[in-house]
Image (cartoon, rainbow, N blue to C red; front, side, top):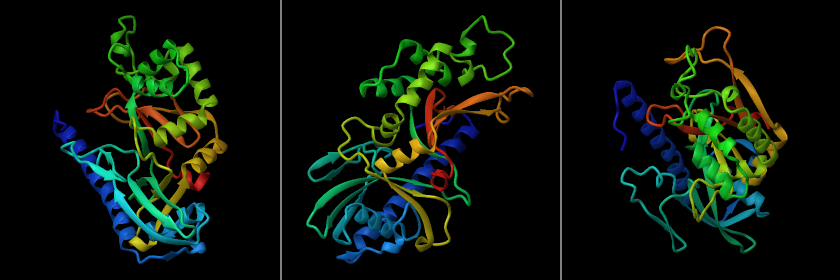
Length: 323
């Protein structure tokens, strides 16, 4: 449980709680709809596509049936698992196929039987936006060392220089400008180094790593949040923006393999120029920094009061219209 340090921090915490509750209500609604459909269920080919408008639960079943070469779903049942990782007491437990689950990257776990007598259990990651226009969607939240270890554990070589530079980027204690007595009269944020300021050897290595390992890194971000996850997501379901009704909701749906391929085709590693215009440490006029990104993923220092040293990966706003 987070303890607010001031009124502003209390508002941040409550906004996060409300966002998680709203997100889980989206998953719960999809789960409820799937469990209440009358089966067998014939698929509607006119509603199959990456970006479609309609009932999200029905669109999801349509897409999954299509990807499994089936025109009819004999039966399906769904479980909402998204609230497990953020449960207040940390003790929520779900059991599916006899497998106990306490944390899972999939927000919905779907058990489905197709007309070809194939039964399978499928994990689905959900994202949602309730603004009029699509916004960035958080994909992965970790630390500099946590991200480095994730890559190392999955066969991607990371040097000590690269780990040092990513810790500078996040503002880890001991790796900040304010920890270096040789830095005086700094005008930009003293709590972290920006991408263009981090150790050059490490920075160049990271840029090469992102270029060479686009597919592997994005797959890890999409599927590998937790160790020994029994139901890593196979599909992504993303509510793109606010809707006037449930049956007129626009969603984007991809298999994980599809979104990885589309992301790589979209663009490689690049840097976007920006300047800090809000907060306690506004940049002086004419001072700019570089924001790293690859494919549909944007990377930034978390910087929230409760998570000052975190590394945050986001899906680019409106990526589903661009790829």
